[in-house]
Length: 280
Length: 156
Image (cartoon, rainbow over the protein chains, first blue to last red):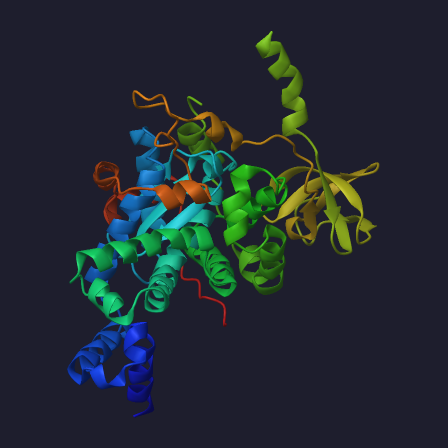
């Protein structure tokens, strides 16, 4: 009952300003419709919807930076990524991995199983285990639906309630465009810090499951920790993530046993160098 | 001339990285917990980091050289200069007969570029062509002598 009250209250807040001061005109049928669509927006988004939203967001990100035109490199990263995703709780998503032609140091997880890493970040790595550490972190974002939940939450707050419901149900093209724009903008704002730290902890586990030296992710974080924070190449990544030193402290305090148990697994420096460090 | 410059710069770039020991740590003769302890390093000791191996980093602390747990090291921020994202600024396209500068040619992943991004379905289609099947990924892992094992997530 209190939930229904909350829904009605939420729909009243979303009501146009003029209507709030003219209660006689309040159309009870229209209001019930709005309540229904609020209910729709707060239900779970199913997997096909998640994949469809993810495709639109991925196309937008690719509008900011295209793929590196190197098929061998792209296939290599897809092999590493798909192998790791196979060790996750969502092994059968249509996983896609892409290296973006951008000097900025960053990586992105898109709902539905699309992961991007920039050439700028790849250039800072020295082994396949480091690549695996970063991809595993991003895979955890998808497995735990961190971005999807943030999109849904933000859509409810940012769009009017009925527009959010329509957008998630793919009813209204304009509302949907707004939702996708919001989804893309989210990569400028970042997730909650707790989500990032969770992706670090669980990412270490996913990389270890895949047979990689578990120190891959901490190694990358240590490299990033040494980068001058005023370098514009790391500006967005530093803005949207906890500081590398904080992430390293958390891994040291929570993950040392796992890290050490799987530290002797392969790093695959040579295979990485052969496929990533060529013709640059 | 350029290669001479590179040759001069290269050793500087790939060698010792200044770092700080963030808590008291043992300097080991080998990258292993049961290796001989060469020295006790106090918190805030300044060292030079040389290479990483698993969870260990080889360092030089004064005259002593050995291995410490990599997570006790923090690297000096600001040690590196230069701005690797700056080239983006010069990547501006000039279009239109009026000669006015527009920025449609700017691509990249800073905040503004993300905000301006328009969907690129052609690139998305290309992304799909590089996807790897599960079986192919498993074969690739086997080539690298990677074997999967069951590892539990930590308790929250």
